[in-house]
Length: 456
Image (tube, rainbow, N blue to C red):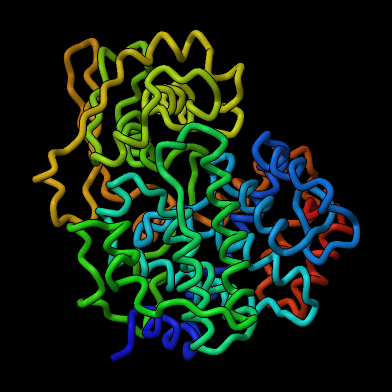
């Protein structure tokens, strides 16, 4: 009987045709991630990683770095993955409980920018293969894996991205399965690092590990093919007794990106805040209140969200991204959140701080969450005039269930460029055609010549 890894590998290798909708969604995710990466290049986390490997970065390396120069595919994936995730503006993928694209896109571009023969169509196919592999691995261990404190981006993300890289390298299903098996031994990352610069480093490490796992498999290294479900394997160690496993797994003809989709972030902060923020902004739009009109704000979220949002009184901009109190008050103060809200100066604004004690956060009980794939997040805004306004959201804006318009996608991308101090110069339009490029590597070099920010 085929193992879970063999089933995944056979499925993603044999799937060579995708609907136009699936391809469009994949290409949108790739462009969105590139925008987030460009915005992130000035952050301390990717600059620290690039500095740590400065002797390996120059003008003649194989793969392009968004922070500047070229390096080996491993180093490029590490630096670019850290940059993609450092502002927490990159997308979410609920089936994997991961920031799927912040691992996948840097890993795939590390390979594609080193080989002029790789086309945009091949990049898209590899992205969809890696995303489906992430979803399938996550199927057997979540939500217990995530609730136990593992950062799915650096665990499930790494294993699934290894499949995507292996597909991009043209490996057969046997080698794709081996790449994922090897990646299981590289997967790591505790959520206890949330609110520190190590959190985005998790995405960079996962991208690097995905590249290296695929290269190890290409070179002939082998591991156990039942390492997901077998004894002392991924499910046992990372999921625990509550992990459901893969007995009910069904690999459907319709791609997961069409049935579950990604969530394109509109707020550059932890996704655990987003549904509450969107619900509160809905109420504010409907009732027209200001923060001075508010007596208290009560939020109710999943248990893992409470664990993630560990900073009610954030001391720096990274902690602020993981503070329900700061993110919610800042959003209500101006009707939106932007990258500019997450600077050292911005987080200590007196007009924000004086309202933050009004916000409380509680979690659903374990019994209420048990057996539920996704639970709605709630907000109750009590006004000084005595009115209590309530709203809940099961899905955030930017999800498949509440999609954003193309104009909003472009606006976010331009915001990312502006944050990095880079002019647009048609970069968004050019990247939108990356999926049709004859050579991803040549296209990326063209962006550089045209003023893009692939290499600074």
